[in-house]
Every structure is written in C-alpha cells, then in structure tokens.
Length: 498
Image (cartoon, rainbow, N blue to C red):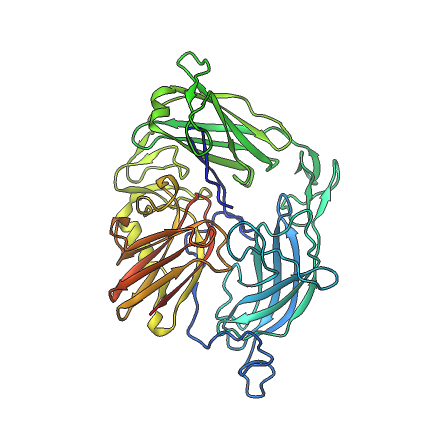
C-alpha cells in the first residue's frame, strides 16, 4: 500500500518498477491504453438475463477455451492467470475471476476498496495487454500482492467478459503453486516456476539456489537547493533489499545530531534514519529516494548510506557530501532517476531505465503525449480507458494535492471531450485495473501546468482517487492520472457526466 513514511526530517519513498510479472521492463506511458467501446449495460448474470447465453436470441458471447493460474515473483505474492479464448465480435479484453478454497468456499484475496486489506473473492480484470480486435487470443491477467503464505486460494473460476458485459461459460482452474527451493536445488531465475528461499539467490548455469550476497550501493546523491533530495541506487542480485540506513555527519564525518520532526518524531533528536526499501527493486537493481527538509540540509553537510537485505547482510558504507545536480542541455544523455537535471523547460525522455534517455523540450513532448492519448466522450458512451503509468513526468500535481507536494512523478494522459456542460463530472480510478497509488486532476485542453487544473484528488477511496467537479463547461480536457510514487503501474479510469 501507500508508502508515506515521514521519518525524522525526511519524507521517504521506495521506488519500484511496475509489479506486473508479465512485463519485461518499464512499460512506455500509455503504450497499451485502450477504451471501452459503447455498448449495453453490464449483465450480472448472462445466463438469466436477455442477451446472455441462456437467451435463444442472444448475440455471440465470448468462448473460454482454457484457464490456468499460478503464483509468481521473488516472494510468490503475485498471481498470474492465463486464458485462451475466442470472440467472433472481437470485443473481449477482460475476465471475471473468483477465488475459492478446495471446498469451493470463497477466499477473499482482492482489495476492491484500495485500502490495503483484501475484502472480496471476485472481480473483473482487464488483460495485461488488450485483446480487442482479436477473434482468438491468449492473454494474461496479473494481480499483484494477492497471495501470501497463509492464503487458502486453491481454485479460480474464470469467465471471459466482453466490453458489453456479456460473459462466457465459467471454467474452473486449480492453482499451480510456485516451488520454494533450497540451497543447491535447481531454480527458475524468472521466479515463475520456482523461487529460492530467503537468503539464497538463483544463479549460475544451470541455475541453482546458492548463498546470496549483500546488496551494494552504486550511486548516491545528496542535493540541496530549492528541492532537497537524497537518491540511492544499487545492486541486489538476490532481490531481497530491505532498507537503506542514512547517518547524519558533520564536515569531519562525525555523527551530527539534529532535531527530528515529522509525523511520529515529536521534536526528539537523532543522528540517523532507516528508510524502508522493500519493494524498491526493479530486477536486480534498487532505487530509493528521500526528501529532507530545508532545515535539515542547512545543518547536515554530509551523509553516510548503508543498504541491508532481509537477512541482515549490509553493503559497504558510502559517505556523500551535499552537492548540486549536474545540468544537461538539450540532446545530452540524462539519468531517469534524477541524478542529474535537464535544463529549464526540458525533460529526461523517455524516463525509462531500460532505454537511452536524453533531454528534450517539455512542450513538444507534452503535446505529443496529449495527441497520442486515448479519448473519452461520455456523450458517445465512451467512458472508460485502461493503460500503464511509467516514464517521464510532464505535469506535477497541484500544490497541496499529494503528500509533501512530490514532483517528478510519472503520469498518463487521457483526453476528455464534453459535448455539453456537465452539472456534475466524476472521474475515478477506483477500478479493478488500478494497482498503484493514484492522484487525479483535470486540466483544460493540453495545459502545460497543473496551475490551470479544475481540481485534484488523492485517495478518495483507499489509494484510488475520485475527482468530483461541478458545473464543468463543454470543451476538451486532459485527465492526468499521476502516480504518487515513482513506481507507477497499471490503471483504469472512468468518467460520468450529468
């Protein structure tokens, strides 16, 4: 759930990549975004309602050929479903899923109110990659952080669901459990079929579980100025990073005690802080950032950082002085994690670690993003879109909307056309596809700044957002779906206009 750790004088957030197990890297912003097409009302029971499979006059419904599912990931916490199906109408890109135990009793594994607590056994999920336009397809659905050591999930009952809400017949799938391997046993380095127990790493050729190694910190930045920050990047082949300890030092590298402020500190004093880094890994690399208060930077000229993993192995201690960021000009290579800065009015594009990043004009990048964005039009019945958030930040949330007014967060853009004025306009990310902490704001046209935003919301429903606006004039707008943390993820967004 949401990491809003305000430790001492630091507001710290662990930064992770997209948690989708089917992803091979950071997805491009909105690469797989798609829209709901106009259609009928959702049918809750297709077998009994008009238009369902039980109706002799029923239109074609999807056909589910097979379904299977398993838990995956370094800790085995994610569930991936694999479906094979057909749809002559070519409008299926989702499945309804319900989890049960061996006796077919419901198992609550899904967080449908985005508060960090599983509250439901079933929900409808869109595929990781859209299958709209395909008469036959194989697809996956990744449900992050839905399986734990005490979970009773043994079965999944799966039905395909098309864009009009019609469902296929339901198939039952028995869960395939990821094997937990011990020292010197063969393992799957992808963390799909198996994973090594804590403290071991999967490596070698052929791959076997072997004693893990301590994490290492490869780069640290301690930056002052108008936007102070600390950045920590390192390697952790075991993918079990747990924390980064930060010591406060004076000019002679001796401990420096400062008054500690924040949500839980109450003005006590201290000379160090431990930042939670669990979940900050993207592959074998981890990245963590923290935001010191200006008063902290004025008192502490140096810091020392040490990373630790879940079994207590620690990195070499790295001392770093307060410095200013190097500035790159247009066309120069830049660091997407912010270890340097592009010149004013430029951004580090595409902002994806696996690609080459260069500084380019923010205005042209923003215009292109708006041009490529999916478009919603409530008057035509097009009210939902789905996609992914990652990469370069082109807007920042309006002041006061997100914790600590965090900047530089990735976002997705969705266009909105209102054919007529809306007395009440509701925009929400409270959909099953939303897997990360979102903020929502609406700007006119493709405005360059959120200063023009009509409104902003963060956390109306758990970590999902719902923005309700009154008396919105007809016209064209951009919905910005922003990640409160750097990690981003997959999202769904829906609008209604009255």
